Image 1 (cartoon, one colour):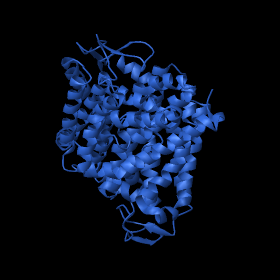
Image 2 (cartoon, one colour):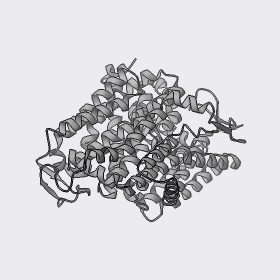
Image 3 (cartoon, helix red, strand yellow):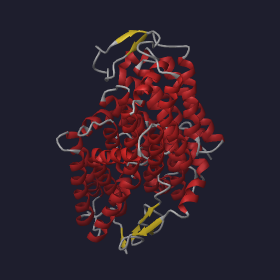
Image 4 (cartoon, helix red, strand yellow):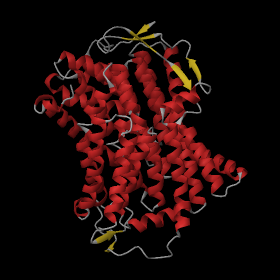
Length: 552
């Protein structure tokens, strides 16, 4: 057995600095735009191993095994999702279905700002609720680039939009993960998150359009933004507090899409903004007076349904794949579990991160059929056959997709290897303990701890599992509500989703903007930290002022 050490240098500040080295290395290299993302990830992974072995005293064999486990987890399930989303996207482009989809959405509205609301926010939230784990950014990024958005707009804005729904993603998986490590009823945690995130479901659509179109461009479409935000935030609160935390995103996103489409039948902005690029610093963007979208030959009803069919198939398949009964059914015969020798249950997580020494499991569960990516592949094959592709052509296209995504898959595997190694070595816990020592300001910094967890691991679920128990122990020591701080970990974490390297690589891959991960990171970083701080301020107010908002 090896016990994790959280202050290896006998100085909390120096130990925290050492723990931060891997993630700082990763972010600096990516942001520099001088090092390719897969090289930056590999360098950061080497740094993480050196820190784990030589500073945190993790045995070298364990460190290398943790790295290998993380790399495999990076491909299954995350890389597997990305690969198959891009495969479907390439099929729809080749058959012209994407062109028809572009014309169809233009029939609802030609305005790029309103297309963003409909696709990036509302439609993306549906995919977050159905599958999560990178799917919404991959799908919406691909759709936006197909609609003519610039690569930076399609990538960065998909990341910003994919925030408010994340805590309830993949049919409430982050809430379930948080409940599993804290022992708190998931319905209580889901309800508490539902008293935090709806405020940001109102803010994020405004923030999204401001980031894209600037202040003036946002004001011109504020009625539609308000309809989009309110029609998502209100169901998000009601479903999470009075029904359950599992179907929050599905219900809220469908209501939001329906309300927005209905509203746009009766209202359009005075001027249409047709520029596909970010307008924040470009006031020369093309605009024209609002008019019906009659330019060119309108697609027939049959063509419209044919263009929507691949995505309808994806929605149906992923909804089935996300249910517990389906996972239980297929996992009963399509599962292979591999406890990693020399690693599984041989590492103890120690107090004060946990109340008593707790062995860390290290099992790779190859639930190949229930993976979201497997559902996506099946949906892509079915859609491809219905679009007229031969089996041989599908195989050829898939091989080409693997070639296109190769570097991105390497990057994602390296990112997850870093996350797994820092978790098993106790590096993440050292960073968490630094946040936990902030006393009366803990509601604010505890929220940022969730943000940090997602930035490090790429997953709100992983962040909740990593820091959920620490939030509970620290809040009880400080006389705060563990339900409040557990929920804050998840709510703050959603704002870290846009800067985690894994999501950035997914976005760059979906938009074919390889090598520009640093540009995307620099664009979204301000938005990420600003929104996370706003969540922290809300939690501070709930902890000390509006205590009646806390679920008991």
